[in-house]
Length: 232
Image (cartoon, rainbow, N blue to C red):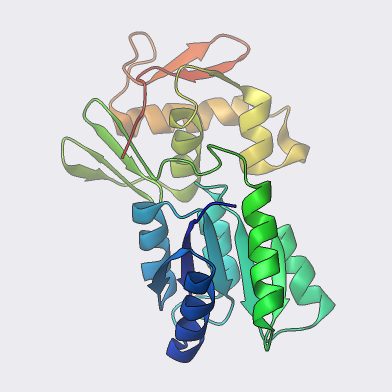
C-alpha cells in the first residue's frame, strides 16, 4: 500500500498527536484540523485520501460535518468517537461514513482499518471542491457561489441543484435523478415542482432558458450544464 495524505479532524490536541505519530510511522502524510469549519476547508484545499473525524467537535456535530462533506466528496471517512451505542454507529454509517472506531482504541486496530479503507478507495473518489465555469465560481466546501466576483444568494436546495448539475457538466441529469437526490423518492414525479426551482435558479444566475449560458433544458427528460467545470 502506498503512502496517503490523511486529514484528522479532532479538537483534542493529544489525540491528534497520538494519531499523527501512529499514521506517520506507517508512512502516511498527516494534516490536522481542530474544528468543523477548518476541517471542511482543509478537506477542500488538500483533497485527502482519507478523513479521520471525531463526532464531538466544538463548533458543530461531526455528523453535520460528514453530511456537508458528502455533498461534494466521496473521500472515505473513519469516525472516531466515545459514543459506543449502536444507534450512534448506525447514524454515522447512514450519513456516509465507511467505518467507526470507539475511543479508546489500539494503534494496531486503527492502522488495520486505515489500510482497509485506503485499499478499497477507487481512483477519482474525491470530487473537486471548486468549479469554475466562465464567470461563475461554485465553492462546494463553503457553499458559496459568485459571478464576476459578486456573491449570489442561493438557498441550500438551489445550491445543491447547481452543484449536482455543474459537477456533471456535459452530461444529462434527468428530472428523476434531481428530484430523488434533492427531495427524495416520493417526489420523483414532481417535474412541475422542479421546473419552478430551475426557473428560480436561472433567474439568480442571469441565465436565459432560450439562449442558456449554463443550464440547458433537454425537453421532457432533464437538464445539462453547458460549461465544462475546471476543478481547483
